[in-house]
Image (cartoon, rainbow, N blue to C red):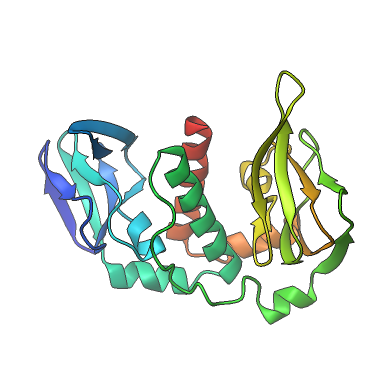
Length: 243
């Protein structure tokens, strides 16, 4: 991988361009921003140890924002081919989690999430071997699968059915955060954050899930290359700061 030194104010990535290289920041800082109504809207600042410009590679989509150096910055250039190899070497569930985190970050920063064709999107989320190690649970309509504040022991892969993610407001009203259907994973954020559940999940209709216990989930994460694990950690931290 090539290492480069870049002065302050240098545009590394332009919004709308097709995604190419990503950059590992060794020293210095970069800012991620979009032009909104003629004004610069900063989305994030990234520093040493973080990777910039990789989201378009994960989504297989054009750049969704600009990235520029804020000061003299030392970078390692990560080619598209190398990044794709790192993704390919990751378990399918890890790739799914990574893409899910990207969508969450985009939503939090007001970036459209409905474009792109994720790499390896057609791969099964869990391998045949992993599938054999999981148990299957069925949840009747109206059943609460877990509640906000509970300890997190598993993530869930929906085989059939539909669930609703919600929480109660200070006025004791129900705020629906979203729904998930077949092929979706839910409950993974609490495992990634090593925290209690942040929301409630209820089955909307008869729902069948593969239950992924924390131990198996952690094993799959550890099987991913260091670069991918680092990205997931960085995304979780950024989501916590933005939420």
